[in-house]
Image (cartoon, rainbow, N blue to C red; front, side):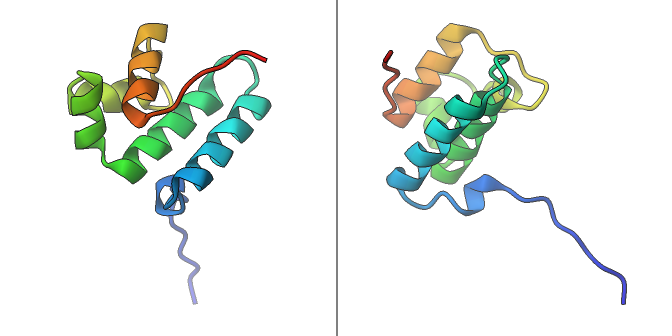
Length: 94
């Protein structure tokens, strides 16, 4: 029998705000310094909550949000902050 694989999507597992924050904090801790894991985490959380509603709250088109949070995306810091604000996530320094 031929094995079939599907792409793992964190959005399928991020059902609670607590899980979303744990995931995001882990990505902050493990990010190699280029923001790739943080960008991926924000994308997963946005998909879990609904890209359309997140894009509206952030004031970004849905397509623009997908592009900004894609693996090859390079969003401006202002875009990241607007997405985080739309998700109700606050960035703090420690």
